[in-house]
Length: 222
Ligand SMILES: Cc1cc2nc3c(=O)[nH]c(=O)nc-3n(C[C@H](O)[C@H](O)[C@H](O)COP(=O)(O)O)c2cc1C
Picture 1 (tube, rainbow, N blue to C red):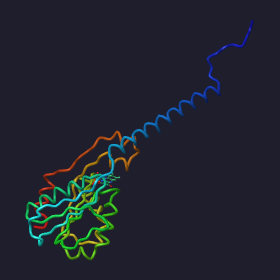
Picture 2 (picture 1 turned 120 degrees about the vertical axis):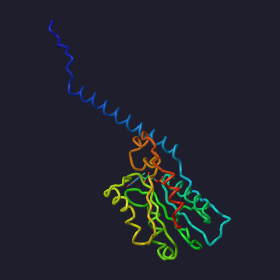
Picture 3 (picture 1 turned 135 degrees about the horizontal axis):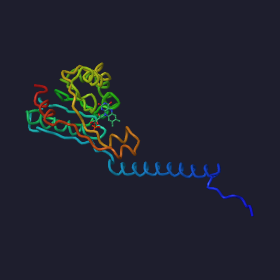
Picture 4 (picture 1 turned 45 degrees about the horizontal axis):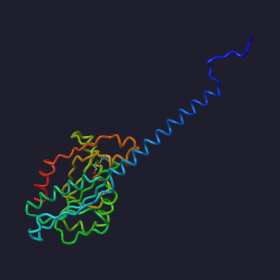
């Protein structure tokens, strides 16, 4: 009795079914994981609260300094706070505030403008603020502060690359000093830059050198 011979050969239809299921499964797993990662990131990062701080409130109004910062993930705010604290101890009357379009420069003798760097430039609200306040900035002492994570080395290429972070603001302001500090790269920031799944898996990295930051604050506007 010669019936049909049973072989283990996979037919074209079987192949398509198997690859279809495998591919579909991988896509679903990937989307599922990415969805979970994004939910987890949202829960973890929340919305950053941008705070105001004052230091040296007993000091004369003639010494009023504004430290205005633009941040996405908060590290520039903490740098601004540390600088404000140091200036307060030096005898200045200090306000540390987030940069917004309602921030005014009236009454300050000196201003430190600080921003996180993203995509090779200051954050848009900081650039817009400098452009909108060009005239007021001419009447005060100004220092510019950038917080970033790339181009931290001391070679000419690295130095030129970090100086270029200010190309968008230099046309609008004459600063007596420009300073660059290493920042912190965390998931809140990475979530913007990278697919959520990768951002979720990224380790946090904090390169801020508090001694260097405080040392600078002890000499600026001397
Ligand atoms: C979307 C994105 C883009 C970035 N682009 C740059 C860049 O072009 N150059 C650089 O040096 N750092 C870059 N960084 C690193 C940030 O400047 C650094 O993490 C900084 O400390 C963030 O400050 P913040 O915590 O105040 O937002 C980038 C970070 C993010 C999230």
